[in-house]
Amino acid sequence: MISNQPIPPSDGQRPVTPAFSVWRDPWWLASLPMLLFLTLPLLALLLSVSPAELAENLSKPQVRQAIEISLKTTTIATGVTILFGTPIAYSLARRRLPLRRAVDTIIDLPIVLPPAVAGVALLITFGRQGLIGSWLADLGLQLAFTQIAVVMAQTFVAAPFYIKAASIGFATVDIELEQAASMDGASTWQVFRHVTIPLAWAAVLSGSVMTWARALGEFGATILFAGNYLGRTQTMPLAIYIGFELDLDVALTLAAILVVLSFLVLFIVKGILQRELYTFSGSK
Image 1 (cartoon, helix red, strand yellow):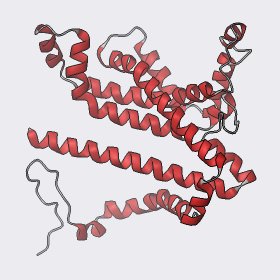
Image 2 (cartoon, rainbow, N blue to C red):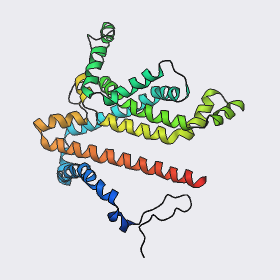
Image 3 (cartoon, rainbow, N blue to C red):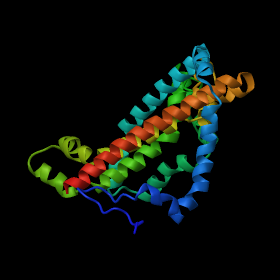
Image 4 (tube, helix red, strand yellow):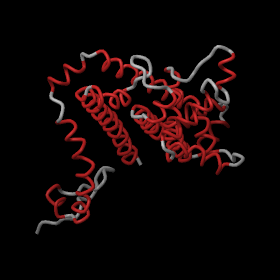
């Protein structure tokens, strides 16, 4: 008699359900409507752009510029987030911060707020007549409607993804290992670099990728704070928006590129993390 029970794990691997039994699984069948709802629009988008159209649209200057600006600004935004977000993530995981709940809530706010609200908040803070922007203007510095504004908008909405993920990763590191390294003479930085980061690297990597992907798709805060200037602040999402009015083929091309690029990055990183998880489980 053929059994539908999962195959027992071996060598630290997780149980594997036989492929032929998946379609008899009521939970899997109940999952299909939502899975199809999420998949079909993306598939339809990809099918709407032929290879010939893709190659033709990629040769257009506005398309190349939008891609270059997006990749440049999202990479910078991710780097800034890692640099300044790591201390916050570690403090949330290990320190008794004053007003910790308030700090944690502030970090979560950009995730739930409409991006347009974030854009307005940045504009009235760093714009020419803003709270801080007016002082900067007196010094001859302007942040709004520049590529710096693009990076700031992306960082504002995407940084919480890294901070939350990294904080969870740091919290899972055994504090006794850090204390043992300190007792052996390691400095605080050496403990963090050689003990904490290697043990929490999966969460750090996952948070970094989620931050990069979120920054890549940022639209609302960017268009309000940085504007939509061709070759200067026009990222891929902004080019898609204007493309629906001026050139639908360009909009579809950039949208398809965004989908494929985001999928590949997330898929590869998930594979790396899953492999490391299996290796870690098998080594126990």
